[in-house]
Image 1 (tube, one colour):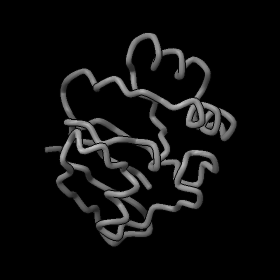
Image 2: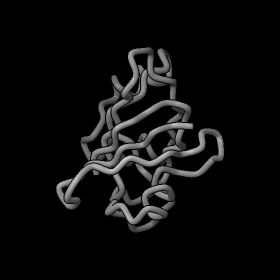
Image 3: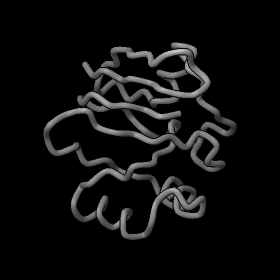
Image 4: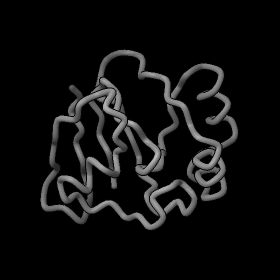
Length: 115
């Protein structure tokens, strides 16, 4: 189980939910299930409207995270991540600070999501 805490200026207070790690649901689906205001349009990683900041809330090395080619392109073109951050993700398994909620699969680690 992972604790997923959502924070947004659109919400009165932060909200934390349990998400089952490994069930292959996206962060966007968790947000929609709990009526968290995450912007989205296409839901397939092409538009970039669901860009979110993700911070791991553990005192250990964050889990490596695979970025889809669409996600790399969209986030880089939007100026959310750099080519160096993409390379660090691919080579050193260091997750970038920005992700697309429609592509991010919840892992077994507690995270803070800024919408």
